[in-house]
Image (tube, rainbow, N blue to C red; front, side):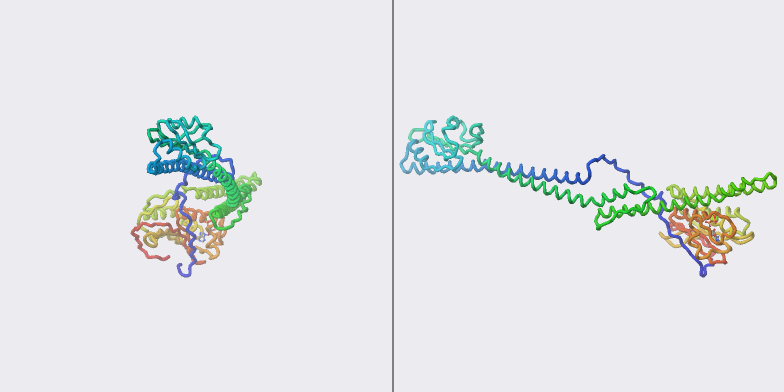
Length: 503
Ligand SMILES: Nc1ncnc2c1ncn2[C@@H]1O[C@H](COP(=O)(O)OP(=O)(O)OP(=O)(O)O)[C@@H](O)[C@H]1O
Ligand SMILES: [Mg+2]
């Protein structure tokens, strides 16, 4: 049997859905009405504006602090200059405070926004100021206030003068009290800083507008495939799943489109399979229905003929019922709880299957090998599968013919498999049939005159697929066939093989 045999190991299917990790719970999607392109652009505008604004405000306050510091430095320099002048003057014979102040003010060349006031006994006697708008006359009351202030320096901001910094040096010379008051007006330098930042703000605004335009264009370009996915998803109909998204490039957005297309490929394949399944099921059920209707329409009055018709009708209804049951099994095979695996003693399982198989027909049933060990599997489904194989073997053999059943471990360690098989002495399977007889509603030539529905082997394959295993046939036409299933059995379990393989 094994020589020149036709061995068709069917592809191992994906593991049962029950073993798959549960899908992550969907996050609650917030309702968003603004298109993604707008959202991206607006976020970029917002973040750019916040950055520009922060840089502008921080820059402005740094520069304004610089203006204040410059005013302070000017006042300190002026004070140091006066101290040096007073020393030199004392050496040069200028002794009275009045002489000293008059001489000092006469030599002053003041900066813009600066006023130097010389005062004797608290009264201004000389002033040095720039030719700008701020003069002592306009601020006489301010000068009086600063000359008589208890502090010797400080800053002020009045509506008439604007912000200013001041410093005063008091001294005594020739019995007279003298003072030098230095005032630095900071409104103009501050206004210059504001003007500069006003100009920078315009440039920044143009920059923000430009970057927004670029963001709008780039977002549109990046999101184009997503829009295409949306368009295809919207247009796709229940009966036409042929539309695909054009995939350009190889970035992650292109990957979205490619994945979407792959999903549509799978959906289309599932849809086609279901369609074929429904067509086949309809076709298979139509025949018995036609027969039953035809028989009932011609129902004769003759009791004998009536009995024959009823027997025929009853047989057809039985067949229909079996087809429907098988179809339900195949439909359930798609569901996750189709197989419920549990640790199962293989020797007991093999013996049970053999005992049940004997009920299928009057044949010489032989137990060839019995594997010993514990394997995780669904014993009911596995029994169902092997009994399907046994039922087929019965159907292709005659009374008294030999049918052998066995189980054995193949391979070792992780890749070890449990093999269960049924071997008969029937007509065998033609190589051309070997592959297709496992499909639904497919019957081979060896079916002969028997009217099976062609669902038995499809159920066997569905059960092995759900276990992550495979179904196979090993046959030489005219010399019988061995049908079997291989199931994953990774644990290292001892195997008992009383009769070394005839397969
Ligand atoms: N032991 C076997 N020897 C030879 N051919 C077989 C054997 N078992 C199955 N076949 C072939 O495979 C075909 C499909 O078998 P399958 O069990 O799927 O359907 P069926 O037996 O025809 O109908 P059903 O099992 O649904 O009543 C059969 O029609 C037969 O041609
Ligand atoms: Mg069958």
